[in-house]
Structures are given as C-alpha cells and as structure tokens.
Length: 250
Length: 385
Image (cartoon, rainbow over all chains, first blue to last red; front, side, top):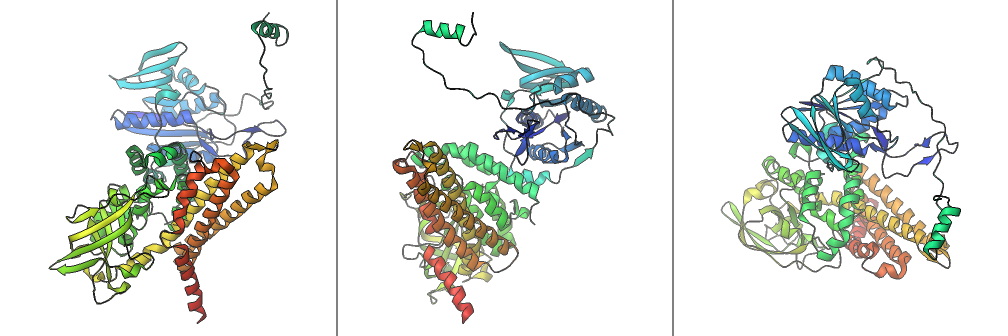
C-alpha cells in the first residue's frame, strides 16, 4: 500500500512573526523555517503504518519554492522513502496545491493521501477537502486515530461535540489533527541517510496546472494591543459597563 | 567526510529541539534525584548521540571535530550531566580504539559503543596519580596469554553503568614513567572488578563517578588496545585521544555559557529594581557584555582549533588554549550569572545556581587549567630553543 504525504514549509512554530513595515505581508526574511507541525504528524502516522506492516511505500511531496527541499529532507529523515518537489516561486494557494496533488496522484496512484489538516501560516484548512472534491475519493478530516482494516481506512474524527468514526473506501484522503500522534525525533543517522534518498523535482507546468494566485493579499497588521483590565466592585457595575461601555449586551 | 551545510543544520536543529523539549524540563529533577531517567537514556540512544564521533563504517555518525563541537555546543545548553551519559562513548571511552585499535577490536566494540548498547568508561586516574598521569601504579603482570591486573582507579566516570573499561596499567615494572604503561580493554563482567559507592559530588548530579578496584583481574593479552604489538604504548594512546577531548570540553563550556547568558539576560529584562528592569543599569550591562564577548571568543577558538585538527594540522597547543580559555570563561560567566540574579542566583531553584556548581568541574578534568598552561608554555618554549 502506498501513502502520499503532502507537506508544507512554514515559519517555525516557535518564531514570533511580525508584519513588514509597509504592511504588505508577514516579514519572513531570515526566519527559521520548518515542516508544518500537522504535516509532521501526517508523516509520523505514515511511518507508523509502515512499521505495522500496513504500508509499503511513503512518498513525501511539497509544492513551493526550491528551499522546500529542506522540509522534504526532514520527511525523508523521519522515514519517507522518496520525495517529490513541485517547484514554483509563486505563492501557492490551497486550490493550486490541490490541483497539483490531483495531477500527481494520476501518476503516483497512492492508496491514501495523508496530509495535515491545515498549515500554521495560512490556517486555510482547505487543501484536503479540495483534493477530496477533485478526486471524488472518500475523505476523513481532523483524524485523531487512523486504522487500516479490510481494505478500508477507519478514521476517528475530532468534531464539535465529540468524536465521529467513519469508515472510508480506499483510495482515501485523510487529514491529521493534533492528537493523531506525537512525532518522533528523526535520529541523527537517519538525517544523514536522508541525503541519499531520491528527491525528484518537477514543475506545475509539467503537471499541466496553473498555480497563479486567485486571491490578493491587501494588508497584514498586528492585532490591536490589549489594554489592562480593571476589577469592578460588584455585579451591578459589571453589567452596567458591559451594557454602556463595552456595549456587548443590551 | 564533512557533512553538507543542510544536513548539518538539520542535525543541529534536531539536537536543539531534543535538548529544549526533552532535557531542559528534567534538569531540576535530575539534580534533585541524582539520576537520569532510563527512558531519556533510551531516547538518547535512538537519537544516535552515543556514536557522534565513531566512524560510519562502525555504526556511528563519523562527525569531524568541528561538527562534533557544534553538536556539543547545543548539548551544552542543558545540564552537563546529560552529556556525561554519552560523553565517554564519544570521547575517551572509544577514541583509543578508533585511533589505535586492531581491526578486530574496532569491529567488535565500536558498533556496540556507537549504538549505546555498551557504555565505555576510561580508567586512568588513581589515588596517587592525577595530573601526573604517566605515573600509573596499577600493575598488569603477564601470565601465559593473559595479564593479571591489580590496582585502584579513582573518580571513574560512568563506571557504574559501564560494560567496558579502558584501563591503563603498568606492564613494564622497570620503567616508572609513561613508557611502561599499556591500555587494556576490560569487560566489566571480568571477575575481580569491584566498584565503590558513587562519590557525592559538588555538581553534575545524575552523572556518577566511583572508584574501580581490580583484584587479580585476568585480561587476555589480545585486549591490549592495538594488540600485543602496542605493549607499553598505552600512554601514547591516551594522549592521542586528549586533543579532541579537550576541544570537546571547550565546546561544552561554550554551550553552557550561552545558556547562562541567555538565562541572565531574560532575568535582567524581567526583574525590576528602582522602578525599571535591572537590564537598564549599565553596571549590569557591563557584566552581560563581558560574558557575551568572552563566550564568542571561546566559540571562535573552538571552531578554529577543530578545523585545524580536521585539516590534519598540529592542534595540541590550540586544543589546550581552547580548554584553558573556554573553561575559565564559563567559570566567570557562571559567576556573573549568579551575580545578575542577586539573592535568587544563590537559591537552588534557579538554574544558574546549578550551572555554577556544574561548570566548576570543567577546569579540572581532562587536564586542569594549570596542565593546559604548562602544555601551551612548553610548546612555545620548545619552539624558541
């Protein structure tokens, strides 16, 4: 069984991001970049499935600039067998990514596409669902548990108000939630071996996909700074302030 | 072969993450309990930390000196006791075999040391033999194809967890100096090995040292490092491992200094006196700046000496310069860190207080500061004659 794991290069989750001074975008110059945490969870899950003998091949793929190779190497160090970079300098959006993945799936023919539910930079939470729509495959999003049995994928989903379990016909699209697993540290020997694993590069054009953006970024700014609160004397004052100052109740 | 920049960076960021997420949160517990949780030791094994310097052909990473130093600077950001777990396997516990071992010894021991399945321990120091390490009194007397070892080794790091000892013993009783000493690989299960209770140390709780007594311990002559051909050349082997070990300790000192500076600056920015953060007072800024400048100087020295060694240039004097400067530096940085913390810095619950105790050892082991001074001066004077 083959698993395709799409991953994204994002600003490391420990880094505090600030807008550029002209507000045109987030300032990403010289920041530490990492594999998106949800993608890392997806890679880990694929590796665990292979360790259980359910999966035979793991292919990591990333769509983005050339430097995304670094994150693909991380995926290879964690246990992916080979990697593909779909290289473009354009800022790719979920729709374009889903189209590229669909085109890649036509040749790779994976049994499962296992990807993060969202990336921590754009927080779009769209790629998996869009890919489900393009392919017509069953999808299990926000997975907190994934098991393969009798040729089906059983996904425990984190939904509002609890957990929902769905059984998906393969091939299927599964997106990982935070609690699916806790990723391992890539061992140092595996980091060194990752360099020798195959990493192929192609372009969106070769896949016949137009990745030019459909949306326009207008402005990026910091949220308004919070001012210090006050302690009110009694409930009556609180209600009064909520009504007349904050105007959140009427 | 040196790693490419990308792989090295990935290696370092993995170690950095392991240090900050797994080791740092355990520091106080390890200090309190004088014990490193076995699960963490297993994680260190899985990560590959035991085989940093062991060649790839024998299951290690085969890092060169510079790469090793960069990894160790990351490890230095947390309690040195953690490094001690795998320190001997990467240094004095394995390098003798790497440099002078027979092919058979390398094939047998190095993969076990690289994986961490075997912990190596280095038994040189004795009750009467400290800095004068050539004056080893432990005796090894030949009986057939074995040697019988008798004597006591002092302050032996990791002895209680070791499966393998590198023991230095006098094989030529007529030669009182370094030329009569051989290095033996001794299995910890050999009958006649007795360990003392661990010493109660000033710092580095969690890392254990004790005395090891050899009482009629029979060791095959094939276990001389390098085989019987290297009889009476054990001290030479010991000395060869030292250059790299000294640069390693200097790199560790740089790591600890970085942590101390970082902790002090964070504290100084938060702590308020006279209505403003103490970081705004120039006398404090002076301490912070001196610490940073000295730490940076040590870092540059370490990298330069490591590169010289990797390039095959003589580096003994440079290694001693690094060990001397960096370990003295971290002593000063730790002292300032406590000072910046004021009364809090004297309390055990603050990391700087623990580091202050921990780093004191660096100026003593693997050659005291005074021994480093002697080596440096001797090299210069010899050149002038």
